[in-house]
Length: 424
Image 1 (tube, rainbow, N blue to C red):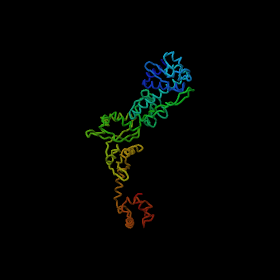
Image 2 (cartoon, helix red, strand yellow):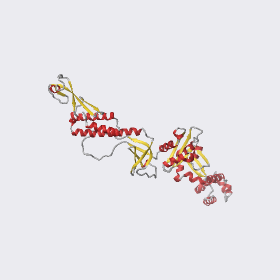
Image 3 (tube, one colour):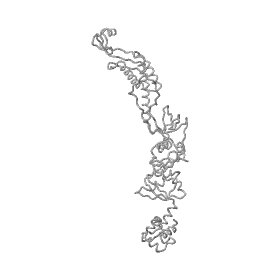
Image 4 (tube, rainbow, N blue to C red):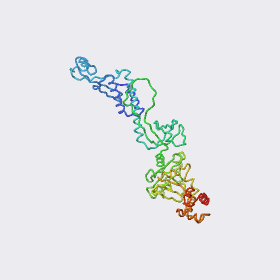
């Protein structure tokens, strides 16, 4: 027999493109639930839903008896012979149950349960689809701006970009179309085991799969380069490492699998057209593309681009790279808020100490300057210093006033005189 519930479900199936087999299973489960609420024992019941014809058939198997004690599982011989004149006591009789006999209350519960199950189905399908697409770039429209972030619509599916995942100082407005990376999908809470009762409606927060997208994640930049640089997409050029302060500056180290192809040139493109596309998408973020190297004496200077270091000295025990920078390039090497130095340390894995070229050579000269070359020092004072194993100007400067007083034969006046001679 036709059922208003099945007809409504058929319409939903067309609108929401839900698989009919899935809906049939949902309906069968709902009708069995109704039977259990009405009759208790449902072992003798069978539900068949025909989605194409919009019909539901419910059968109950009853035992033919002389006198009925349980009308749910038994039928009298007299009633059974109205349909089958040859049936006998003890035989099984299959009776068709009219769903309309459930009553309006149970029918309403069935409808509510159906809507709940359909919502659960949609949530599950959305979760499965987008969970398999984590790491992809999507294009969505901003449809709501809140203090905590932005809600995007992608093919009628809502996604959320928290403020922490947006590019700093980038202001998006409602209606803006933006690219973002699908970062993660949080599985929705399930209510499949909850029974729907008729109760006053309460306002409750919608619970569904939460799709988190990002424009500040490093993978977003990598995906943008894959889109703009065919060599990266094809695996000819590989992104080996990336360090980034979103919206401000980034460094990306690349390596070519083909010696004939310049990895940096491939990423920059002719007249910078490729990298400028990425920069525009990232709200003007400056990007330094550098060639990857496993040799720190080569890689560290490259990482400090746009500065051009003069010399690099490596201390492997302390993982320290002392870099000599031309005086005019010190600002470039540090960057605003020392961002350039910080990103260089991240991408190389070395602690970097920057020294101006003029200071370095001055210290080198002082280290080599002998005590006799300091004006105003008497031979007796020089001898006392040498007896204390102090032989150069640099060693003398490192002592300071208190250190000089600790040298035998050096008093306060002599110590002050020495420091004045050193312009300290």
